[in-house]
Length: 270
Image 1 (cartoon, rainbow, N blue to C red):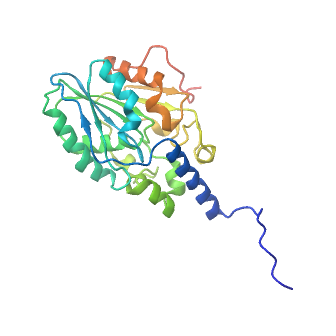
Image 2: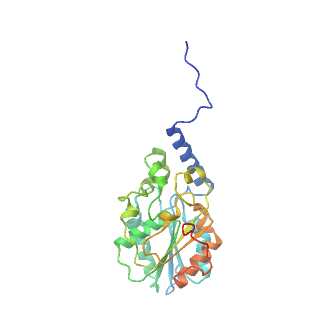
């Protein structure tokens, strides 16, 4: 008997499924405008104000922080928006080679304090920077969708070649094991406010994550020991930094060290 022709409707193998997931991630990144790294940076030149350093996330550019930048500027902050190639370096390299000299440039204006607002991977870069640099005028930190305890998505897909191509060496550092970089970094000594999303536009990735999540990071793993405040919002991971409610919460924390008095309930609190 001759060999049977392959069935085009056959269930995909585990390897095929992983590549389907990664292809979905690539398409999402493209649609969200995430795939054009720009190594340049832009900084405000206003001296003497409280400053805010914006640090975008993985496979994004500073354009993703544009609405946040405008609103913070309107609120009277000197805003410095870092641009870096997140897919080319490790977290340690980004912190040392991109963020450190950028903050040094910001310090030349002698700001009263330097706050940070970061999205996703940017939060781990900020934590790495603060763990390795003196910072006498450190202000508050607002973390948007931070993988502070890693992400199960990296546990499942980090070993795939396509994942490495999409997310680079820094993306592969965001697992949940005890020896992963997020697990090893100390919590910042500054006041930290964490905003976690609870809405997902990627059900495939969400299926890999236990509990409420934003499509990339679970609510539980966004939390950080010693954080000053925590809030959840019904927003998906790629859009947290653009959401008007998230921006309002960010402004409130930078000003008062706490989020709005009326805020959504933590879904894990019961």
